[in-house]
Image (cartoon, rainbow, N blue to C red; front, side, top):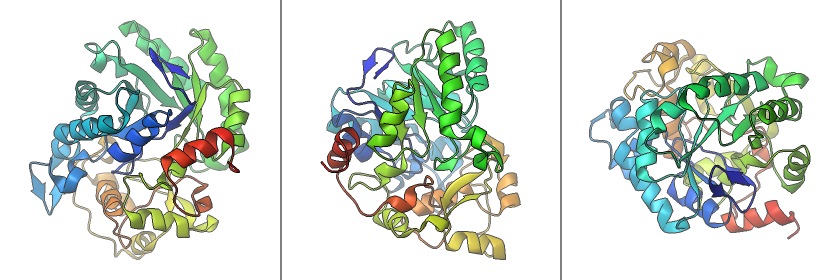
Length: 359
């Protein structure tokens, strides 16, 4: 798989998962094993016990400059490099993030090779990488229409996407669909991939990468046969020893049953998929932790107004999950998360994904 000037030996991208689920250990290990490791830029102020957040309120990084800590992100990238060396390494930066442009530049300065952006339509993504022409740019879309819009807008920067990820509604975390669309046949991954491939061909055969609900080699082979250059997988990498998530986070997924994985309302304004835990019961009863916008993490939340409307702060609850708080944590997972049965090494998982489960 080729993305810009970078060759990925195995056509597998590890999805960027924050807060703190895919940082240096996971991303570095995936790149080392021939896939594309992806560091999440979300919540880097929590890295190494908040060592890189210079101002805390209620023991939480204060403001977007601390929640999205540049020093924390650079440290994560440097530590990932100690694992993977010069292998291609990516960073996922949510378009909904406050300080989006600054975070993209921080990642480029830190030395990543590829920037991946979803959670919105990143029409001005190239604006922030003018000084880094070798950094490949990969937007995440949920439709051919979105890709067409991005390509048209990017022409003003004399850029086109170096690849595009098309994500279906079985992925973990935030969806690019309404609640109802997530269950409609026309929006399922196998039905939205072909139009995106067709649109990508109009712009010079941009590599298309399928994401959302992909689990094993048979899934990978299916989408490669459809014309995809590769796949992106997030949830399955949570079930690895190297995943940066707390052991209790991993255990929460291993213990989850299929009916426990549901779509929830989110302060971002889109449905989000995760494991139903004590948190959702608390939200329904009105006993969840009080919302106080300390980290100012995403623009759509409007400094906590949307968080109050849905009953929880996403930055606080994701960081609780990262730290292993099973009572108030928000545990994002894809629809197949219940299929995790235990932990294995990234090396073993990559072997299974490329050669089959029996090997």
